[in-house]
Image (cartoon, rainbow, N blue to C red; front, side, top):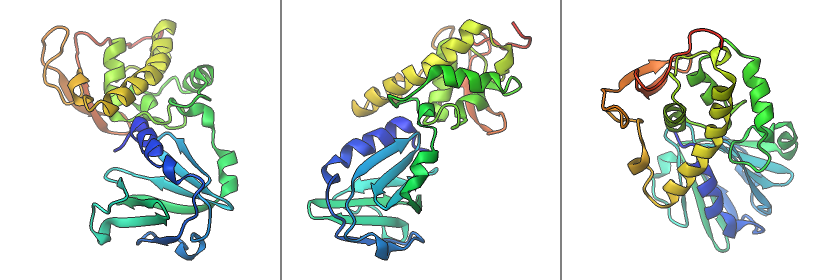
Length: 248
């Protein structure tokens, strides 16, 4: 599943279309395609893993889900996977195997932009308040909660928890204050590292535990389990990541 930093890269690639008129729209997404031609692509907004293509009075919401992808100027996937193709006078934008919704632009007012870890509007104190409201939540679930850490995905989750030395099954309410602060800080900090490494094509080279077999600190075999309510893959070190079992 694409994570927040990958969506931000997509936004950067589409900047040449901002201010341009949609000439044609097609694809197999179940939306009213006929409403799109002649609209002006005014802004590309991102919220975590979701994209909002603002074309007033509508916004096109794109969620790439688990296997979605995109391309610019050249169709790279077969028509059966093509959900939406937007044609402009200076190029083409394609989305494949993803969720596409045509919504009223007023929906943007309902989004808590402060929850996006890559946004200038990110509010760490607000994230802290949300975490404290769920003391029984496992930290592996908390990091994937898009209402708290919008844009954080499974890779970021695993790497953040290793960086701060916290076992994924630790409960939020049991974390010492400093560890809670570290969790919030690294969720954003690692996301920007992810973005930089992704642009430099060295992301996988910088993974410490995600999909790895041995701990880079102690050399012990890493544990791999599907944990939490999300049941996503967790890679962690039993020795170097502390399981907080009691409130500190």
